[in-house]
Amino acid sequence: GEAGAEPRLAFTGDVMTPVEVMQRDERWLATHERLLREYPLVTSEALAQADGAIFGSPTRFGNMAAQLKNYLDSLAGVWLSGATIGKPAGAFVSTGSLHGGQETTAFTMYAPLIHLGFIIVGVPYSNAELLTTTTGGTPYGPSHVAQPMGDRPPDETELHLCRVLGRRVAEIATVLAQRVA
Image (cartoon, rainbow, N blue to C red; front, side, top):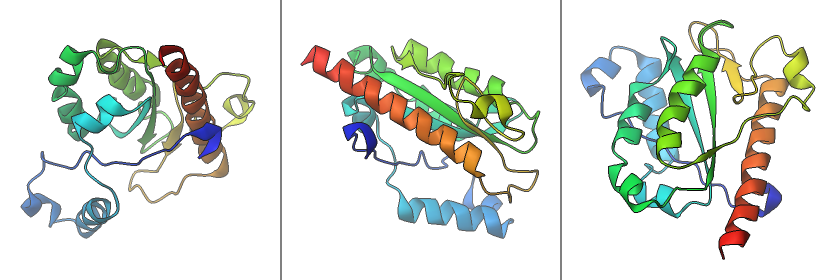
């Protein structure tokens, strides 16, 4: 990866929603099954060993999704060990509309990350895309406006801001890991 990073993608899973409920919506079930096939389930051990982390969530009424909150709430052992203290972390979000809670969702994600000792990394305004985007993107992290049915793919500006965040977290993680070694 860029900046010498070895990014690993993982999925929190959905232990909150019964399969019978997902089966009522073909797209929901298909997406859930695809994610389970393509990505490993994230573990507390993997997070503790990572040099940095970026968390993503759709917005649910201005908050992170319950599935991510459930995962973060399960990290008491990581918190007690101090394994994530001083490591960089960022967030990206998606919403159904431009004013659907992008920034508040990032804030809800940052609160537990700060308690875990992470150093929060955002996207600086030196990226002109933050000043010109008409869709997603905030200094608190990249965002995507997926539209109400979630059928709008990320545009190039949104993807660029994601790459900026990834590069920043990787570079900061590399510097911090060298200081500790």
